[in-house]
Amino acid sequence: MAEEAMLDYFYSTRSLQYMVAESMSKNSPLFIGNLLKKVNFVGASDISQCITRHLRFHPVNEFEPFLESSGLKPTEYTHLVPSDELFLNKLLLENHHVLCYSGVDPKRIGKIFEEAREVFGYETGVLASKIKAYEDLGFSRLFLSKLIACSPRILIGATNVQLPKVMEKLKALGFDSDWVMKHLSEEASYDWSSVYRTLSFLRDLFVDEDELRGLIREHPRLIFEDSGEWTLILAGFQTKLGSSRSEFCSLFQRFPQVQVERCVMNLRSCFLFLKEIEMEDDEIRRVFGSHSWWLGSCRLKKTSSLLINLKAYKSRVCEVVKENPEEIKKWTMGSKVEPLPDTEGYMDSKAMKTQFLLDLGYKENSEEMERALKSFRGRGSELRERFNVLVSLGFNEKDVKDMVKASPNILTQACDVLETKVNYLVNELGYPHSTLVAFPSCLKFTLQRMKLRFEMFSWLRARGKANPKLAVSTLVASSDKDFVKYFVNRHPDGLKHFEDLKNQLL
Image (cartoon, rainbow, N blue to C red; front, side, top):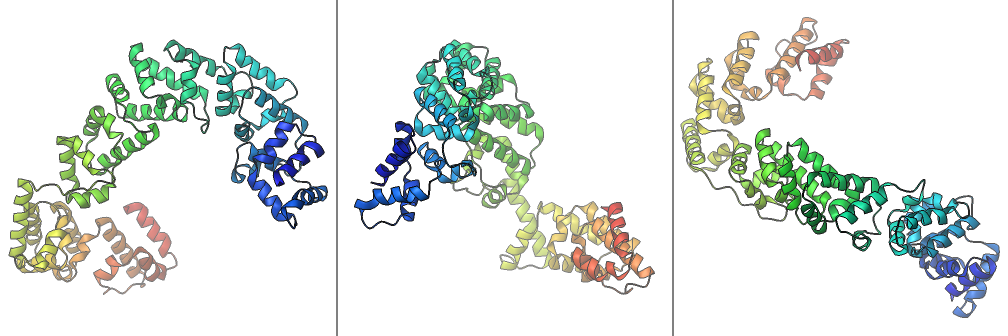
């Protein structure tokens, strides 16, 4: 009854065309519902009279039911409703009529209003002439109505020159307008310049016309998904990887059954994964050159999660991928990732680590030993080498054992790095070996951090702003924020000198 009352109001009182008035009253349930909340009525029988009385003193904004009945939701049309107009104007209604007469579904006209609002301000005859220009190019009314609903902006400015070029290329390949209509989505918006560029790229890539025809028939999304933009992005990605023409063709001919955007995202994820496991660039190119067609359908787990689940270091995972890239298929989202099998080299290395820990005084098969094994990175032979380097630098073997047990991570560093840090602390700064035995964790910090902290400390001490007996652990281990707060700021020029040192050392 409310709909009938609104129809009577729009048609009889406002003198809108009957088709428009009927659509606005019957296809705007949210608008009608909101209106009923504002009207006081006793029963259904007096709804019509109450609405008529209400509208006499409270005229509605006609753009709201017009846009809702044209296929838009309130969240989509709220910003389109004019703030200075209540009533639909003559030109808007005329152009609306032209669109409907041309075969455009009234429920799709909201999208045209949203994307090409200028169309509804055309003077009498302008819109009809633009539509006729496309009809003169040989487009049927049915096909043109679908094009307008999908690409409203073809009605703005001069006739879109790329659209007929696209149709000409497709027609030459054996695809008619019915085929194009079948693969156009009214939910999408098409840029025919981009479609033309994509089609031209594929035409240049495939010399054999039959191959190109088969490709487009099998994967029409290559030219229609996002107007072909993702296909061009994919081409750019593969070009940067150094793909050859034959590799390009192989990728498109064996294109995975996924959206082009998803394919690009998956390839990017795989590329980042290979970079994160530190694979060489030439090897990455080799993997993508031969395997892009299925990598595009692999949505990988995060690298950090994979390394944990595979229970392997980056170097090991990298070697596995080099030997057989198809192992990657087992590491996708939703799959259960099994640890990599132990290699002979890994078992030998573990045995060396175990023997090294036994020599340090750990008990075999104890929880303490298991924790220590997890703390040590690198090959077993490297741990012994690094241990021997510390002994050669003036520490006795017992002290080195105590240092390693207290801070196992110091042996994750290369021999030359350990030697440089010890020489700096002992030979340049003059700290006794006992200082490092008491605080071995200082060797975990970078040499740049050490130099920055100790040079700043020396500068403050020379100006009487620091305790000469300050512990190494306090200097090196405190956070940057605390170091600035409790030491650097003791001198008015301290912060400036600290920043100058940073620029020199870091």
